Image (cartoon, rainbow, N blue to C red):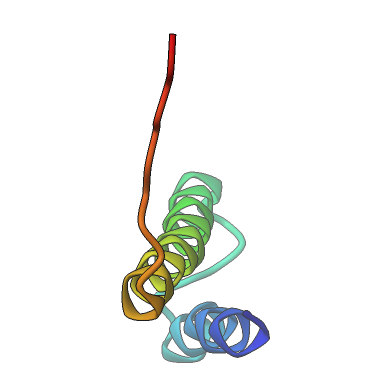
Amino acid sequence: MFLILAIVAADPWGLHGRGWLGLENGSWNAWIGIVTIATVLGIGLSGSSVRRALSGQSDMDDISE
C-alpha cells in the first residue's frame, strides 16, 4: 500500500515540475486529487480480488431459510 501511495504521490510532483500543476487553479488540483484517490482505491481493490482468486477462496453468499 505504501509503495502505491509513493508512486501516486510522485505524479503531482512531476506535474508541478513540468509546470502543468500550480496553486492558481484549484479545480484542476481537485480533479488530480480525486483521480489519485480513485487510483489507489482501485489498485487496492483489484489486488484483494486477485489475491482471493489465487488463493482459491470462494465467494459464497449461502443463505439458508
